[in-house]
Image (cartoon, rainbow, N blue to C red; front, side):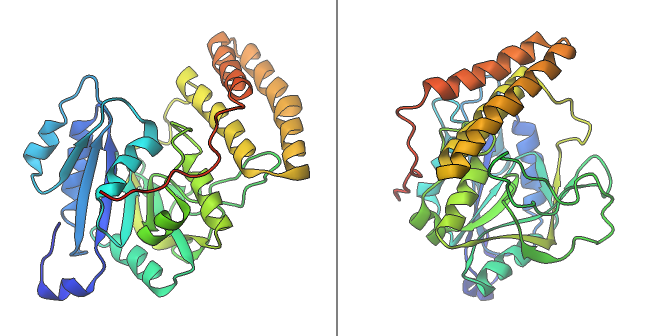
Length: 314
């Protein structure tokens, strides 16, 4: 915990949680930026997700003030973040990717927003690409179309000229950086770790909205994300988990006629369209990954827990 002055006792404690997987150097770069922030009261948890070829102890050696937690297996994005929650003492929990760097004053606007409006259940900052100067990755989301299970990132790829420095309600949250009140987590539950990767933050946001809270975007806060705008997409790994997550999200968050239409759309529009596109691209590996995800959703009808995992404090 970092406390710089007696007056900071009046500020809410923020628990910062980040997950490391084979990226100790990148995580240290993130922590270097974090220790420069002007918000005076926070604690930091780094969860090493069973890195097979990395020594996470290097992180603790360089930053002895953080708490390092190690898992026995790779629990994915949601599972890795959830590991830290029972130990967190903060009023607010900041979930943030280890491949980010933060502006010195990024945290105050997020905390102030949640302090001023108890109806807000989670908030994400403005995100720029680290390697592309002033290029936006995220400035909010459009609402999900629950038939197609699609939404769009506001501002994606645009030059940041201050056009999204506002604060407003948004269709969903961005998992690279999100601040959530602990009381909301205690009430709604933690992220569903059945996803492993992709769509888990959208699922969480949907459940938090269902509980009566609002999801917000705060443009006064800025975080830089080291994911490149030109990163090569469409690896079998990515296609598998994106597809698996999208279909699972539809299953968990639609009801009645919307669920029926969503099933029809995903199976009779998306499935043939994506399959044909990968065949035309001569990517049998992606066809295999896509259909493997479809089969996973078919074979995992029973045993899927539709509730959110409950938080049990240590």
